[in-house]
Length: 129
Image (cartoon, rainbow, N blue to C red; front, top):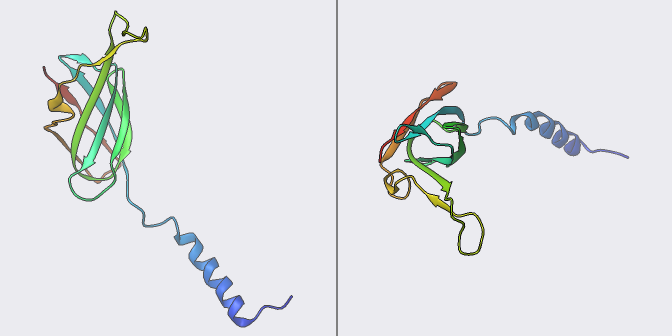
């Protein structure tokens, strides 16, 4: 099998450019912290970081009042949701879960955070009724 100079040149260029494919992507920072509501840790919920400008939305679970996930640096709008199971089952017999975090922290959020461009950020949220 014969390769022309053009084929060999193309193979060399692809070989040289291939290592660069993963470079230059968006930077992500580890964001961790605690979430309390009315002084108690949020047992089971979700936290969402929405960039105020361009960027990727990031989210993570809240477990036993703590969260840990990766987000891009910058100014963020923050939404926090959580549900709890009521003692009485739903009409269909399945567990009955209700949201207990007020809308001012999720659908109508007033929460913000700044993810600083450093290896790790710790951000705590103390939510009130």
